[in-house]
Length: 280
Image (cartoon, rainbow, N blue to C red; front, top):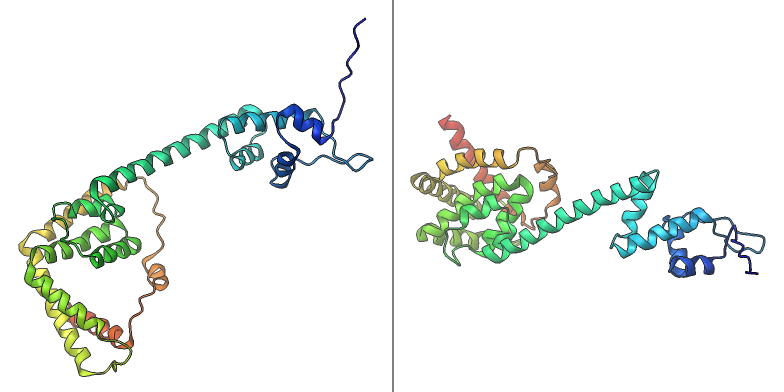
């Protein structure tokens, strides 16, 4: 006679782990993260695993072998009532992850083609700057564009790129910009905000800004900016804007300016705005 085999109704954690091809430590981790419900303990204080628990363990093992993360499994099991729905949910997760990997690869390829750090900016911005020779842009120019893109988006940074295109192609304006930058840096905490040099520097900034605008208009960059709006609207159609508001971004971006430099910026804005108001 052949010996009869009696299948147990419940098994201990060691037997469950051995059958599923995992370890007791892994099973305890599944309990801790909520992936596997923790069964009640028996009279001896040990956990007992039934048929449903073993099915879940087998699915976890197979999904792990397929490269599916425990977090994705947990989300799928929580949201789906049966295995077929779980697999459908996981397939959607993997498809989204695959799309993300494709975007990352495209970003890396673009960095290699455009160069770093310029390639970290949006294509709308880098396309405007792609014709400039190597070294024409200063690191501080790219830093400024990075901040502008964060606050005002790709369109705002692409519009601001006109300034740096003009500076890169007009040595005289570039030299004046560098001089003004050095003068701004000299407005440290030792300078009184109401020192006459602050007002004088603001007037120089205003004059330089007007010279830049004239050069940009002569080069047709203002017309190119108008085309940007059409390009951006077409490319951004259907995309959700996840940027914070400009006001919120400005309040969270530290500048480190002294009181004198802050007043110089304010005076420059008043001079420019006053001229615009007078001409309107």
